[in-house]
Length: 574
Image 1 (cartoon, one colour):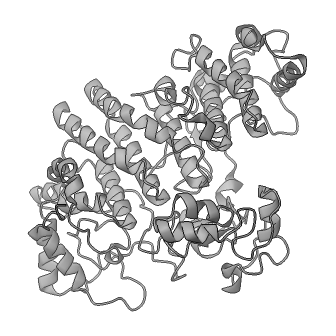
Image 2 (spheres, one colour):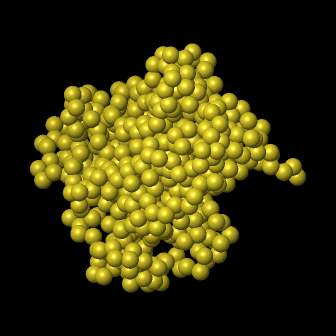
Image 3 (cartoon, one colour):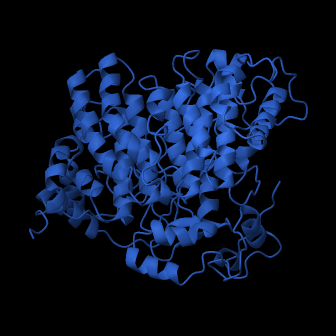
């Protein structure tokens, strides 16, 4: 078997520069401060990074390489899915790096802790070699590294460079052929990383996908090239829906919603894989069906249905899928299918969907009729704008729902003003990733910005509340929430094998399906009872969210929760 490809002088020099650094004692220095590396090490690092497109572009303008861009999620060898270290339990400064500005990952936090990538393996050399002229050898080797935090850092760097227009072909001033080459190269990277078992890497890959969409704005050829590059990635993205890791599921949902709002695609493009049943349906967990149905409900609510809404979903495959899932043995799947049908009803009325309900028994039909009546009573906008994770099918939650101007008997609910104005499509997104939502990369409630800047359906309190333990703190910022996730939240813990921060309730499934230390993780999972607390062994009954919250949050919490032992307090919930 051929061995790994030889390491180039550039990568070897940069690896030597990193190895030459003295060990840290205390917090890392702020980026832009004095470097702790020796002059020869700094020179080697600068030489190794000299081929980067961003540095070359900056050098041609007589300026230092651009740093910054939007905020990147902190990551390091101990980083978990929330970009934080649960190991050293000390919050990093806002911008920290002790490496030179010419390092390929200079604008990624904690780069000095990530090490250097190994040479490209012979098995991937043919696939990876064409990427080197675009991304540089160091970043390309990191993308194919066996170390997850190097893959994560490389993806963060690609997203930053895409947004800044420093990758070859990413600038709107460059010819469409250059952008087409870049889009095809990114598709090669995303095909691997969207399927990555590490949730942090998958989240970073979703950020690159969003940056690719944003960078395609402009002439039609750029949109077409980006769409052609993204379409083959849709099956891998759809496969992440319904994962046991809540953050992976949320990220996949937000990615689909962003594609539906992207001018180069639209809802029919984003939903094409969702309207096909998953492969090997007999082995698919019910949560996969529920997640897909809930996402389709959100897309119907926002985009509408054809032909009334040309950019909406086609009614026939949506209704057929919903009715097929209504026969599922799982109650949550059946409920999600009823809500999808109700979302269709809210858009096109009873007459258009009646034929799909014709073969229901009387007791089954009553379930749908009750839902239709609730939709009609809640008003025209009850199912409109209900996007985001867990948002599909949410009704008006005010004390006095608006008086309905349509009814079940009328067979048609008039469109809401928000739907006519297009609120939701073209909504602003966070510059560093998908439109932020509970559990998403930013950890804040999703905001939909109406024309003129008004916010629709945004509760300011959600931005100050931990989505896991429901701790409310007006001092929470994006950075403070990150620190809370990896240091304080008593619903989360660190996997002792891969050091990811995961939900305690999902630790067993993490060990079975996600942990990169596969053999040891599976052995550890076999020693745990799936229906028990992995920390103390207490029986959790049906393992519902309510039972987990009672065990981990009520009273003194779990007696063996290490975060309580280290001084974290029980959350004050609202």
